[in-house]
Image (cartoon, helix red, strand yellow):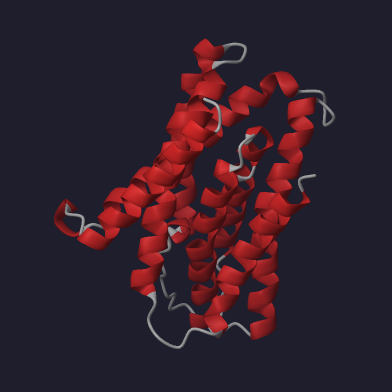
Length: 239
């Protein structure tokens, strides 16, 4: 039963965003450490699990093309999301205007991130994605609050964002077993796109927040912990 995965995906995003109503002090340093851990974890999981799995299927010689497509797609999405998926918070000064570009691109990003979970046999990826969505949801809520959205509206948009990764997971299950459209043959190509997105997101998280490209001790520990946890899962999962 995969119900617990849906619950973890949903509540990490929703509660992470809802924390905006509880946090009274600046928690940006803590969020950056969570980002560093999840970024390192996502990168390690992508290299250890997703890439080998994608290349083990049919038409594996074409997977690299779809990885590049995913990488470029994330670059395009970030032109609209303004880096919210990295935990970036930008205040808009054009009045009470809903940031449609941010919301649409962030929801699409979350939907695609949920798709590899259909092949997450050892449950490593579920925790990395869920952790990654905590600061992303918090950044989204912060943008809405700073732009004077009412609490009810902020909660509504958080609910929409929180449901996207579980929805992507559900659709990917249907694609992988052929129950949705009977296009299971394309599943590895879809995974290639997701891999490209993960590679862009994880490497950006790891390198862009370091002043002068130097990593402080706390961030280094978070990165090493992320990679270490991924390796523990790799070696204890029968690989």
